[in-house]
Amino acid sequence: MNVTVHEARGLDVLTLAQRSLCMSRIRGRDTKPEMMIRQGLFARGFRYRLHCGTLPGRPDLVFPARRAVIFVHGCFWHAHDCALFTLPATRREFWEKKLHANRERDASAITALEQEGWRVLVIWECALKGRMRRNLDAVFDECASWLADPGAATAEIQGTDRAESLSLSLS
Ligand code: ZN
Picture 1: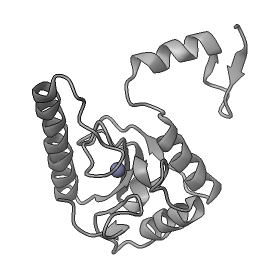
Picture 2 (picture 1 turned 60 degrees about the vertical axis):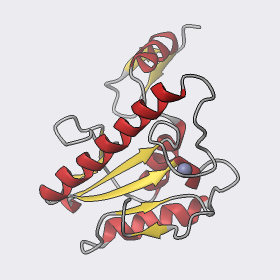
Picture 3 (picture 1 turned 90 degrees about the vertical axis):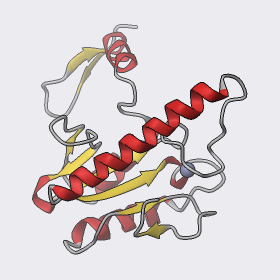
């Protein structure tokens, strides 16, 4: 395959083959749930920076003027307590340690961001995929009103079998 892809800005010209090579080298970038959020918010007029490396935890979407960041978390890699998460049957100790470390890293990133005056929204994969997924427009609307409200504190959006879809505490 040798199709040339031109993105809107005209700066990003890669063949599809080159592109998939790049993507495979960058774990966690441009995953499908993240693309869904990006597209939904872009369509609602929000503009953002991506994967800001100078901020704690490298947030997926950054809204500098709103002093807000969004993480779109995969339920496995971030060990979400939900139906999408299953501890692998083999090498359980390895996975427990690794995923626990991921959770700790997430928690410290959020604390560090808050200390720097950022508001943090975590959107879990299970809000967008699987049997617990929520209405997509409702998720975008929730993101949009959270972004638009400068007083909205750190929050998360997750699948529907959770006690609260938008809760103010991150455990
Ligand atoms: Zn989940």
